[in-house]
Image (cartoon, rainbow, N blue to C red):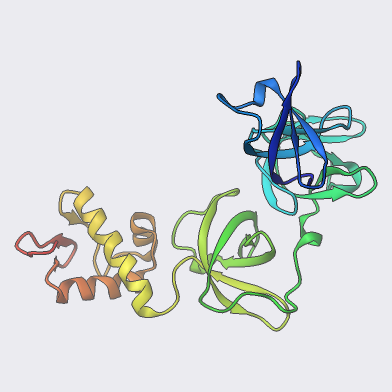
Length: 283
């Protein structure tokens, strides 16, 4: 049984306090009554999350935690004590952050990026707010340029937004390449733009290459035209900030996209606006 992870176990027997589940190695763990699915039967297999309760006993639950072992997440601080801080991670027992794993003293109500690790001495899962030390180095990195990846936005810097890449690596989305709003704690898809020799990863929010980025931008413009009654007060002479606010793309990307849409007769370009071509067979 792996603490801090989902385990698929067999229902062995029922008791007054719940059902006992077992693995192939003869270990068992209690699933309390309140977590037992309706119509659960002895002999069936069930997926549960394993952790230690307030008395350090292994316990199973069908609740879904907000973070798993060796993963990153942004969680709310629900208590700050003389022993450390406690986070809400979706389970009854709050998640502990020792003082030694805090960059600064955490306060109740804060949201903080953390990494979940296993304390080998206690066999308990513990959170660390010192997330930078848990990123994998890029030796033998299993990423390639252009690859789609999962991102978690965890930090704003002068250069842009630091992101967790595939729950393993740290990456950066540059501010001048961010043409849609990013918020702390957002999860989204991105693309590996560059793996630098110094061990840094540049991330793009759009697929790489002109043909790949063009199609979603065309769609975004057509969608916004439909939502706006067929007209957008944007043109070649519009301020780049205005284009970014309305369409969440750069002026360069906007001009390329409307050029193709015009050639395909999907829009009409006017001096101060673009208009949906109502006579186009494919709007």
